[in-house]
Amino acid sequence: MKNAIRNQMREQRQSLSPALHAEKSEAIRRRLEELPAYQDAKKILIYVSAKDEVATHALIKDALATGRQLYVPKIHEGTLAICPLTTWEDLQPGTFGILEPSDTATPAQPEEMDLIVVPGLAFDTRGHRIGYGKGHYDKLLKSTKGYKVGLAFAEQVIETVPDEAHDVPLDLIITDKSLIHP
Image (cartoon, rainbow, N blue to C red):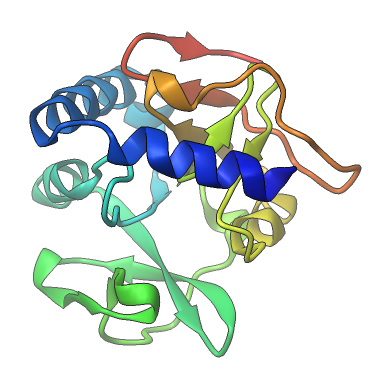
């Protein structure tokens, strides 16, 4: 069931024209930056977008330019490490071709993060998500009290995401059309 949803959502995202993808990503970025939870956060973990995900590159560059304390994920020895990022130039293609910090500087702990911005393929209004099937974010979300935000195109929100007892729902989903508070 989850794999069928993953495939359907990948197709949905890939069907967006580059112009529409950019327009929707920009609307999502603006909504996130306007949130008090974003403005008040001291330590922010945010994914570095790849391919057809909601674009985060401009958001990351903006945050770095304003001196925000920013962290990005890096797959290190098969697990997701939370690495500090001080300049965009510190990123290079890593696991799965996704930009990651080139240095494995001392990783932060999930419980240190005030705001966690996560990717996903499908989301529902209860705050559940389907990721890419590796379980990296599921493990991370269990060990943090930070505010958990998913970024999604409106087309990625479905009626119900199959969830399991160990799943951790998000606190907010931001789409190009709305804020979804589970």
